[in-house]
Amino acid sequence: MFQFMTGEQIIALITESISTKKQQGPISLDLTVNEIRKIDQGGSLDFGGSEFEEASTTLVKPEKKSPEEPYGWWKLKQGDYMIKFNEKFNLKNQGLILVIPHERLLTAGGSHPCVIEDPDKDIQVPLSVGVHGLSIKENARVSKALVLAAGL
Image 1: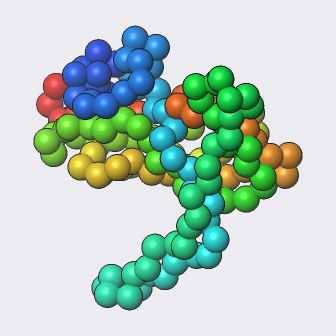
Image 2 (image 1 turned 45 degrees about the horizontal axis):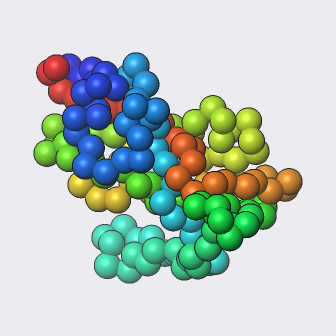
Image 3 (image 1 turned 90 degrees about the vertical axis):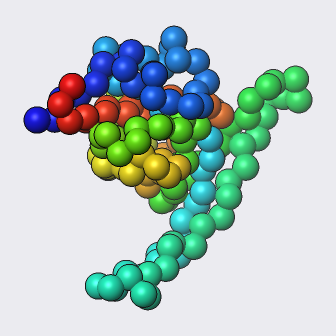
């Protein structure tokens, strides 16, 4: 039987984070933005995988509002992007990570699908930005990770 881990249990499994105190929820961990890439051209999929190609992307650089600010902003126009998160997980094949959009991302005009991620690689999700655009500050909390583990 699978159960959701508590936020405290999830914190014990991560190797990198910005502020575990602010990121921990009752049964989740807020995920923070490390990198945003614009999708320029779609990739290719086939049945066997021998012709698989990732989508072509371009790194989007954040810009500071003033030189003394420690963090910059990504000013995203309408389109499709990939977000890579700061957090790294060490689940040792003991669970699955369910990544859902943070409610603030949704109300700010962005969205991404709910995805189940492999805990042994960098976590990424596709981001859709609507017609009015979206500004995201470096290390912003844009998603939530819920961890399903067997036999807690």
